[in-house]
Figure: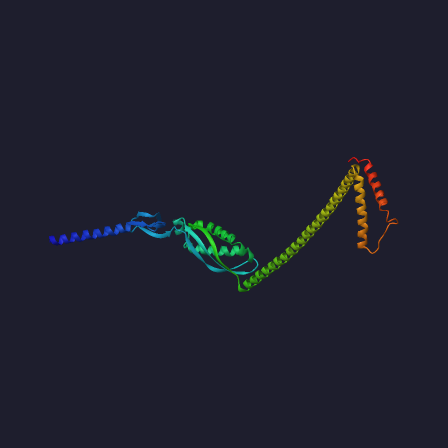
Amino acid sequence: MYLDMDLSGGSVALILIIIAIIFAVKAIKVIPQQTAWVIERLGKFHKVLNPGLNFIIPFIDKVAYKHSLKEIPLDTPSQVCITRDNTQLSVDGILYFQVTDPKLASYGTSNYIVAITQLAQTTLRSVIGKMVLDETFEERDVINNQVVAAIDEAALNWGVKVLRYEIKDLTPPAVILQAMQRQITAEREKRAVIFESEGRKQEQINLANGAREAAIAKSEGEKQSEINIAEGKAQATIAIANATAKALETIASATQAEGGNTAVNLKVAEQYIEAFSNLAKTNNTLIVPNNLSDVSGMVSSVMKIVQSTSQAPAVTK
């Protein structure tokens, strides 16, 4: 009988230990970083468990929702949008959001992921419907910002913060793509023709400028050459005149010296005879004075001219 009582007491203790272990496991909750758990007590919201070691009351408290607080990328399905100029576009994008209030994310909507996905698609259709086709390609940043602003305002009631939205693809119909390609090709050909004509225009301008500068340089050279020639002739004339004047002064001085007249007579006679001799060699016609033998008379006439020159008063410079 005592043995049976001992066995019964040991079983109870074992059961109590097992219950205690189960109770401890149910009561102790370790929450990972960037994670939040929503606790309901008897079916009603009780609290939010933060990362770390937490305790709850087993069988009374229940983990109702688990939320990640990290930034989550959400791929929005592709959809057809119609632009203001009635062109169809196939558009898809990616949405980045983050849970900021675990309580609202749990009870604000039945499924906040579906809610923000649908809102992103409807907002995107609305924004693109206000633009023409060319604007949708040029103003992607405007589209992204407007979608984020619209979703973020509504998502505040869902405990979600929309961080950004990015369009991945904007695909018009094949016919539109072909027309755009033809337009791009025509525009490039137009720019090529313009560049070519501008090149020819610049070439003609350069050639004209070069010819004008060459003509100016040539005329300047000719002008300077004529100036140099004129200055050379003037200097030569002045030099000859100075030399002649000096020679006359020398002759005049020589006639005043002793034996000067005799020397001058002799020189004049020699030149007189030499002139007639050269004239006879270079020309068939010979001009002879009436009194060829009267060389002394000729010399005497020349000497009178020299003497009259030497006796003339000097010109003051």
